Image (cartoon, rainbow, N blue to C red; front, side, top):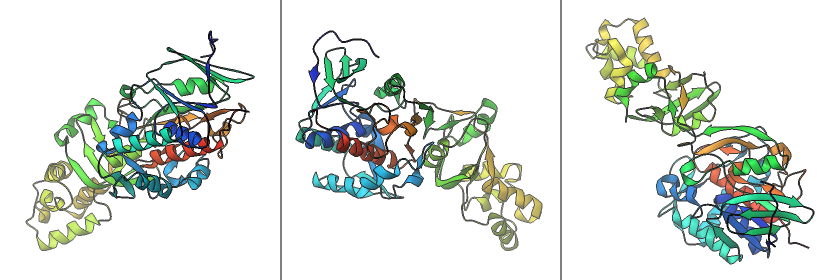
Length: 404
């Protein structure tokens, strides 16, 4: 990354690498403060992860955004930025641009129309600040000397006393994700927290998957998945490779190879007590039918197993307890996950110990900033990662300075 530059570069106050959510926000804020800003990206279009998010409607923030919804080796790091740029601040920007929105569930906010409106809004903010946007340029080298940073692309050369790394993580490589930001951070001596896929569907070994294949396409609207002491209550989806759905994506960020997850398919229900009551009141009812009050028929038959067609009257307390446990404590052992190909985020990244939580600037490398997904701050599913992008982008955009 540190190859020398051969031609006189074009000069700016700050160069922002990456035109995703964090980079667009940072560039717009800095530009509107009067800085000469260059925003660079190798992709042909800006904000691609924004465009595809939320089923094309962009889950652009979450009303409940707080440090407890983020994963990091230093969970407190994100507090400062999140407090200084809140979901209400972003909502105000959205409304100022006339974008209609709605709350779906659990504080998740979406556009009424299209995610493209959020991209257009951020581009308009950049345009208001006179930001120079260069797309389709591949970064060939980044260097630093006493005067600042030089960035060489396949098309040109640029220089600035400040550099913002907003290149994202490794998730969804088909959209252009790469390890560029990690390589730049390492080049300048910053440490990395090991990266791994997060918010990703879980997969099973063939012997575990085979009996589950009959459930492919089936959804459980309300379930609780647990991994150790971490638990999430959301929908669960069976796939031809394993498990997906919001509850699974959430727990995947905490799951590690070799660990089991436990599914409660009837949250807040005393299934054993209900089955005993049903045995008294409707003794001829089949077990699968009784379980069917909580589960889709196909899943009820599957979890009832060999006792599915048995009448409740013929089942002992011990067998009813086993049936209840099959719903309340279903132990599953994933073999892995689908990887960065379908992961929504990348866990780990630039170690926050080396960054200022106020400005996002590297403590030992003046003028170098890291924001967004490239940093070891990863949100839960539901708009939290976008809020981190906006908040960290704002923090750096406010901190960068005009060249003297």
